[in-house]
Image (cartoon, rainbow, N blue to C red; front, side, top):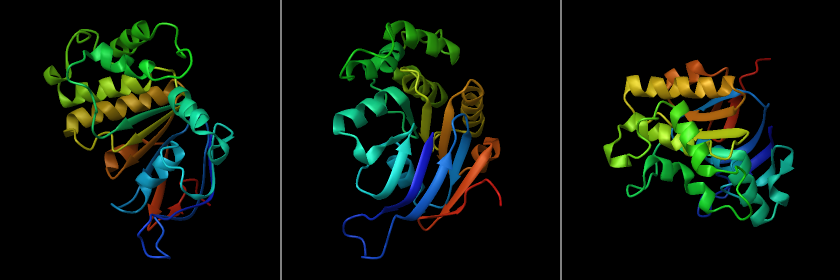
Length: 227
């Protein structure tokens, strides 16, 4: 599903030998639930951005679903992100003037070709209901709790039935109880067949993962697979 080979990332303005990622190699198989942990500035978010095709300036090779991201055109990369990858972030990025259903449907307005799902509205309602928000379909984000907002964001990420979910600190702004509910949601989605990769600094998230990858100073020091 995901294969990184000797990936290096250097940001403009950084010292000549200072790499955000310094030769990272990693394989994540389809169907895994993986937590990537490390201190602030260790490179974990940079790693996630490269896997998700959000940053193209790197050395080495990044493959997702058998596709070498460096060889894809901008249009092809955008199509890959839209159809095969769902993103969930710490900040929900919901539009307050839209209902929960409309927020979940939002990606359908930006696909270049036909929507990957025949009826985005029906799919949005299905997802929100599955995530326990069936009574909030017409509500706007301002009336929702933090946990409810994150579940709307998860539903939006799932709209096009992606193979891969990439999550950057998805519980970071939530209280303990709500955060645990979101963790359980990811565990359930993984059991349904989604490949889930979560960037986190929280032990409660990594404890729920089936595999924990540790990154320090831009280097993977433990790939979670043992010897």
